[in-house]
Length: 218
Ligand code: DX5
Ligand code: ZN
View 1 (cartoon, rainbow, N blue to C red):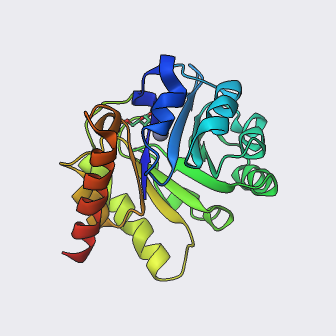
View 2: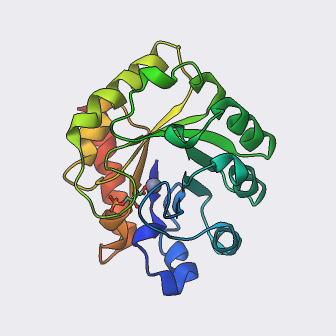
């Protein structure tokens, strides 16, 4: 699955920008609060406005402190998936329960330096695992290949029946890096600059999808 990140879109034309990626699987919506990460983007009212016009389901990535305060609202507003950061949660299982009760898939995100093993106990309550392949906060950063063992380990746990999550990668995914991420076992690929920075976002999505599929076969 390919999830273009609206973070790299033109914020003055969000409706048009959402429609430009109609053949994506999910539209990734990066919420930042200038506290959990040193950047500020958009919040619930903007998400609701985008949700109303987006041709594809929204994948909300909450890079905020105290995500339990807001996560259920994004689910209620119609997001397909709502992801919170493990580093920001005091009770991740309660957040997952609230997100699911509000009708969305629940996601847990890990920063590059956060070990998967520290959060294995709560992952059975989640539907997606977002492995950050850059430090959260900004688009256009370089992919951190050193995080790939974490993706591989997650894939292994899913394939052996120990976990049931979609494995999502986010940060620096482009034509040069998607094959490595796919070979490591990712299911969902977030791509900001690689899609919105392209002249033809549809072609960029198709190209990334084909590369990921080929890496799985090869
Ligand atoms: C970074 C965000 C990413 C970002 C990815 O904190 O979570 O979703 O938009 O952008 P690229 O694909 O440009 O690295
Ligand atoms: Zn993101």
